[in-house]
Image 1 (cartoon, rainbow, N blue to C red):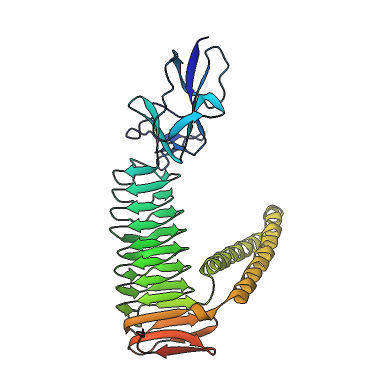
Image 2: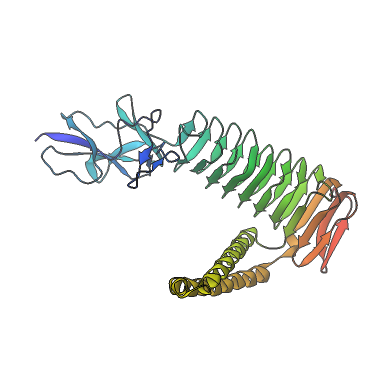
Length: 372
């Protein structure tokens, strides 16, 4: 019986020659070019089937097969449950290499992430040898970027490292389930479930960090949301004209969700106000807008309840004992400190201090660190 080898990936895929796809509406998407063919461990990549058998959906490029061994390459194997199938043994991307089907766990992007690559979504580790340009996004497990990150969105399910820093242009958002390590960052949003280490400065950036934040240079501008140790080696704050705020004592992830709820409430209130004005103009507009108004009011009530529940959970789980701001260098006037429900503004220059909350008061101790 003659057989054919069918593929469940494109064996002729060429990431160097990507073409934007046109949607049903006729719009061309230049940002999503499907740069990589993702596969997961256990996924069937190719299969021998009778030449006259009806082909399953998803089959690409069936090829005649004259009884030679299956093209099993690195990180693939013959399916132990079906000797005619080739499966992936790891998460990664699939392609033909030297005549065999191969899966690689590390995706090397040897150029900038831009209109040549489009956005990149990968199931394993990524190394971007160029920059990530404004408007583009990268998602993967552990992500390393060799050059600058501009106003981009990066989401790492593991750790994130940028060897040349982040110039976010008030658009960049970098998040990681693990740790973040960068030489400097400015005008961005930084979110980490692990630790954040910044070798240089952190300028005008909002930071949400579950564990510890270390800034070896200067921290100036933006708001830091943390719940453990914030260590600023050289300088905290940039003077009264630059708002720098550190908020501690609550879970940063919950704080992030609380801010999102506040933004949602503000948008709904503005929409309700607009609809109420339209309803008051004439009968036709009222008939059109009243159903939307009722839906918006219901959503607002629900969102208020969700916010209240989140706030109660945050306050019940608050633990101020872990909160500590350590500054061996200088603190400049204008820095706002909030630990739990206790708040203060630093009005004078200070040096070599450790800031904690004790007996419902902000306490400044010197030196910042005591050698034992």
